[in-house]
Amino acid sequence: MYQKAIGLRWICPEARPPRDAFIEPRGLPRIPGWRRSDPPWGRLAHEALNRRDHRGRLVGGDVGGHDRELRAAVHAGKGIQPGADIVPPMAPLPVIGYDAVLAAVSPEAAIERVHDAFLAFHRGAWTMPAKVYLDSPPFGDFRAMPALGGGIALLKWVSSFPGNPARGLPTVSGVICLSDAATGQPLLLLDARSVTALRTGAVAAVAAKALARPDAQTVGIIGCGLHGAWTARCLAAAGYGPGVCYDPIAESAAELAAELGWRAGGRSEALRADIACCVTPGSEIVLQAGDLRPGLHLNMLGADGHGKAEATLGAVASCALFCDEWEQASHGGELAGAVAAGLVARERVTELGAVLAGEAPGRPGPEAATLFDSTGLAIQDLAVAAAVLEAWRSGTIKAQTVEL
Image (cartoon, rainbow, N blue to C red; front, side, top):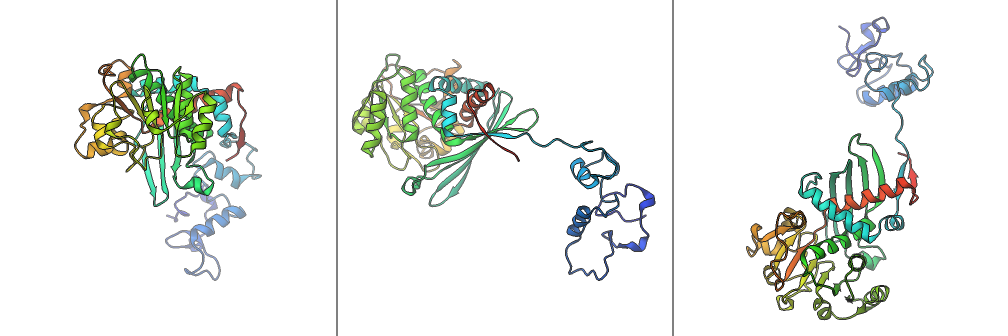
């Protein structure tokens, strides 16, 4: 039997050259003066394809065989009708930027979408593998976050680099890709920074509705950066306020307070609110056990990675505890330190989805201090990103496009 050319079949036996045209065992045509030190056989085969002097022997076993796009390119003008049996190219891919994302989804819509996403995830309709961290010491880390639900798959590639503001860059940046869950085709690329900020604020409102006292009204914001600002906006959209804004950068607190008609104040003032939200980088403790008091609800939104914490272990262990997702929170959230120290066990912590579904109790009583640990879930990103996709399809927002 004649040797196959690089593992591919000759498509017509009569086209086989004589046996001496081969170099055993590879099956490539002899080239005068060729030596084993010369370019690899694989490259020579591709050069032959590009020159079209393979005489039809380096393609699949028949017309309509294995690699349609390769064969179509090789045989163009060789008797095959133009466009026949060719896989169509990918459609232009819309790209949604920061401003367009925030224009597409209001805080009220984000709150509703995130609420429904927690229910879908709790019931098993939406799935979410574990978040993957890629540390880049000493600068920050990258995270890969996939999720699937509602006929859409999401992959979020996002980074957290706390030193970036000193370089004139945002702390959080990244990109989200949405794909069709039935075909795998990419649907949309989105700015991750805006989606992350909006879903972070939305979950604060969802948790407050579920866990704060029914008569809770006032809000304290500790950390008035991008995520703190959207936390305040979403709580205001949910009917909470007035509030007190605190940030080490006084101008940031003053600007946010002026926008919402709240006021700037100190850390202690913010913690005296009915609902206190800590939205800092998680590199310093801002909540002590002595800051706790009956009836307080805490949204801990800053500790979203290994080694981060906004509260002391004693403060965490003293509260009625809730989280977005146990595995993630117990390894890289506000709960992680207390869990590692043996102060908090799994049975003490309730997932928010179970509370929303009515399958687990929320606040134990009006005098309890409740703490919600939000590490940030890909299902939240999926909920907001799906709303952006709908807005683009309806023509509510415009998008740039790229061709891949």
